[in-house]
Amino acid sequence: MATEIIVPALGESVKEATVAKWLKNIGDSIAVDEPLVELETDKVTLEVNAKSAGVLKEIKVQTGGNVEVGAVLGFIAEGGAAAPKAEKAKAAPAKAEAPKAQQAAAKASNNDTFLSPAPRKIADDNGLDVSGLQGSGKDGRITKGDVLEALKAPAAAPAAKAPAQPSGPRAKADREERVKMTRLRQRIAERLKEAQNTAAMLTTFNEVDMSHIIALRNQYKDSFEKKHGIKLGFMSFFVKAAIQALKDFPAVNAEIDGTDIVYKNYYDIGVAVSTPTGLVVPVVRDADVKGFASIEKEIGDLGLRARDGKLGLDELSGGTFTITNGGVFGSLLSTPIINPPQSAILGMHATKERAVVVNGQVVARPMMYIALSYDHRIIDGKEAVSFLVRIKDAIEDPQRLLLDV
Image 1 (cartoon, helix red, strand yellow):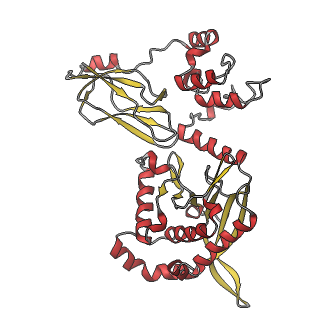
Image 2 (cartoon, rainbow, N blue to C red):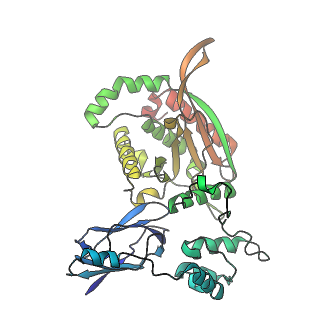
Image 3 (spheres, rainbow, N blue to C red):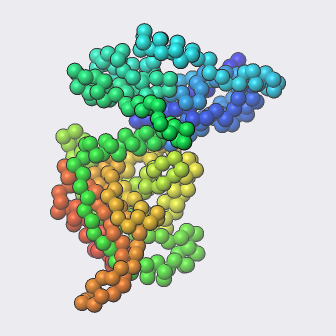
């Protein structure tokens, strides 16, 4: 009896994944709940575990293949014995695929065979002729993104917006390395470009004197860490300051949905985290009802699991506002890009001592530039500037965070 290895539910709005790596070979013994294969979505990498013990009998989708929720990845022979080494080598996952010339001929004669169910349905529903499309997927397979791009293109030139193809022979190819973009990196590129194309995006700047918050942190950091088991950082102060400002300017916490504006009376704050595979934005849920210690612990936990690729899909979706800190890498000033469908993002930067004028005297103060990128379709310039000033006031006078003034 054989047990199917099925692609599990991938989370809200995620219907497709790429087989990143098989962790077992055909003929390997498998225990219950043992990881079998890694799937990469446009948000996270997740493992598919064995539902039963036995031997890996068949691999249906090779590394690099695209799969949809519910698809069969392979089969486990229950109670089977592990194959001898020689048999393993013979049965190791080899691509039983037609040569490239045959594949090209097959595609030319019938492009429909290069369509999986999701893009096929979209094409059929919109009356799209896929015969002229060039697929960006593995072996020229047409992806859902290819179909959606073709639908956006003018009717007279359906291939005008086809995904960019490799540029062909290059003069110094022997001194270059070509690596296919991961699904996560492709999705990051799509979302950032989507934000630029859709939102009327502007950025406003201000600067913050960090003297008081640094003094407060230095005064309490040891006792804070001793009591809560976590270091007191600056991010929790900015999260709290942002929430106060979001309450005062609700449009910054809203989003556009068609011709409606959706005002959100909850504060799920995304905190951008850099990982080896790209930038992700895990979300601190209901941050307005959490204390400094809870926020610091959650940010630390989310950041650690993000770098290890262990975040769940639900932890990366549904944020209402995002904070990104380029200062940890030394950035002095930048213009962050909105994380759609959100309407604004706050950028923190490096703290540097600069000469500033205070009460008529030139003094050295630790200063940080802060930036707010916002969608001008929903947020007016006055609101954006006032929002950033509200954050500046709260950080320069941290007592405001405790008194909510």
